[in-house]
Each structure stands twice: as structure tokens, then as C-alpha cells.
Length: 148
Figure (spheres, rainbow, N blue to C red):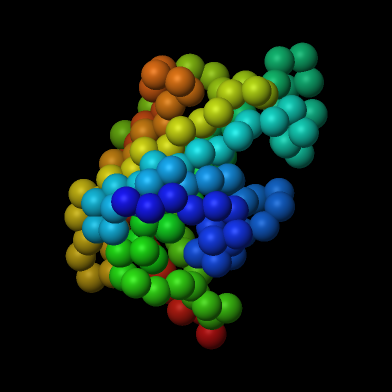
């Protein structure tokens, strides 16, 4: 199990501000699981419009944060890093549930486990917590494709 700072995370994810949604990796066990952190700040660009009177992190961005953690786990498991010609795509999202709103000041803990990999398709059980409270969960499927 190894931790990763933002500099190492940026080697595994092509995303940049405002779409890089993993701030730190607390632990990663290749082939098994990852625990990552997203610090939710009032300065996020989506908060002025979602919602002006009650800022809430959009559920689709929580799912995206889970997928970004899953991407790091996939690349760590494969012992590779993405290049300029590869893109990590969602293939499916099943059983998505949102249990509690995520607000500015929250720290989102992303826990993602590999449940299956077959023919380049990775399936994960993903959960997001604020403290001990489960705020979202989903079964997600992702794949890497060469776009060149």
C-alpha cells in the first residue's frame, strides 16, 4: 500500500483544473483497491450555479471522482501510465445511489475496489464517504482506449 501526492496523481490522470477531482491517494493496493481524497472547496467552479442558495456537489462529479480513482488503480495494477494517445472512459454505471448531499468544506473519501476485469473492461465497486457517512455508491465500468 502506497500513498500518492498530487504530483504523482497527475502522472496517472490527464485531467487538470477544474476537472482533476483526486487530491491525494491514501493507499493503493494494485489489483485490489484504492482510497483517495477529494477536498471539496467553496471555490469549485460549479458551486455558483449548483446551487446559488445552497451549494451542493453534483452527483455526476462524485461519480467522476470515483472513476478517476479507479483509473489510478487500473494503471497502477497494469504497471503503466497513460500517454497522450490514451483516454480512460466510462463504459457503464449501475446501482448509483446518492445518500447525502456533499457540501463545501466536506472531504470526500473515495473507496474503490476491483470486482472484475475482462477484455480490457474494468468493473469496480465504488463508495464515497464524508467522515464515516456513506454519501454515494455505484458499480462502475471503465476502459482505456487509444485515440490516435
